Image 1 (cartoon, each protein chain N blue to C red):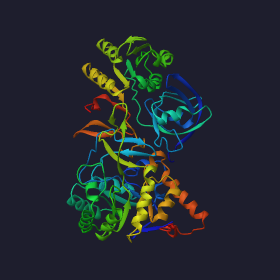
Image 2 (cartoon, one colour):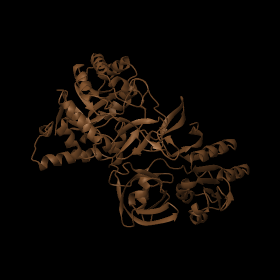
Image 3 (cartoon, rainbow over the protein chains, first blue to last red):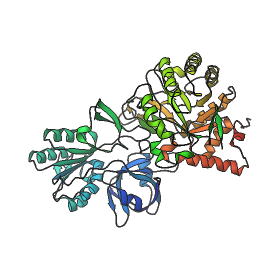
Image 4 (cartoon, rainbow over the protein chains, first blue to last red):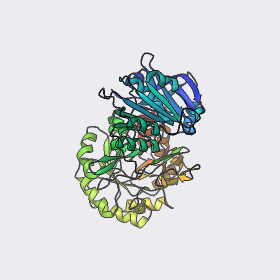
Length: 262
Length: 300
């Protein structure tokens, strides 16, 4: 039985913040297979304007309705074309692809930390965790960019929003909130997704407090399935380090494997 | 649909372009690799290479720039771990090699000649490595010399892959043929650059990279046509082939086979669709043998 790309109908679409699109599609295969942290590789255009697919993380799935939700930011030509699709349109999707966050029941006190568009894949993760006490710290640029607050509130026992300019919630970086939490010793694993400087900080704080962390990396991709080797990331290995690939070996890695020195 | 390239019979003229298909495993999850005429694998070097720093890809109008820098596990690992996998299929195995020195190319040709592969493609045109690479491919004398040297160690047919970053492709192709090339493949990527206007920095960590995709197709078709007018050996044409019609264009220009590159990234079934499109063209035009269209362009 060969894998295939899926032609999926858009069931819902909404702009939830300036340039942030919340899209839902119907796909039994993807909805039933998807795990938190995985991504979809979406063909945004049939012409040659955006020739490569765009990797977009899965935000949530409704297994009853076979609905898959992904949220993305309009950044360039591809995402602009994707955002121009309307309900009822069909889009060509490869997925689910990549590794997922590892959910182990031994972790009873998880902390989820997301920055910007890195917040989106953490919602499915929060819903998939069986622990009772889930903490989520979500960082955004400003009040206008805050999204998914209610969704996270429903599944997390503690949730805090941080904004860079202090226009909403805590003023500052989520990593500052995270460090306070780790100091209290009430966290046994950290799951992170966000911009590279944030992930680097998360990794370093987790190391200081000896808390394991899993982080989701981002890199420009070509094929999305591990053949073209463009989405390289530096991962520790027996011979010091090696380039692994975000699309197939990741996007989720254990923090202690990742090298951020470039 | 059978095609003969330097004594090796391919089930059909559709091959994967090196560097876009790994060692076949990933795409083998999407379709039956037996349907391919040939699989040209990820570029190999004598010792393993980590490749260049990321970002290694940038999208450009109707194309992409890449600067992977030949990340690969080395030729010996390939022979031991990847050839047995690829050998399960009827698609012919084309090993693509790159070296820093003539001696490295020779050593690789020797190692591969003793392995269970079908053809060797010598890449003297990679724009993404500091040593060797394109430096070997842009001078007729050097191309002739390296082809002659490597031929001495080759017990398999040798395909020489040419760089388009030259003034006169005909001269280079002739030099390769005179040096003993059994076939010629063209084109490799064109050297290009893309800049992020907000950060004012090049998108690729390597600053420059190889341009491929539909953007380069007219250049590739032109070069195949020009080369076909001066060499007798078969030509494998590549550069932006996305559909069966594109493949037909290359074959009319003079290619005996075609290689599909970044179309694989867009659609994992691209090679199969190119093959079906080619078959459909032949059917519509009542052509029974694909060989009948090779070089049949009628210039104005």
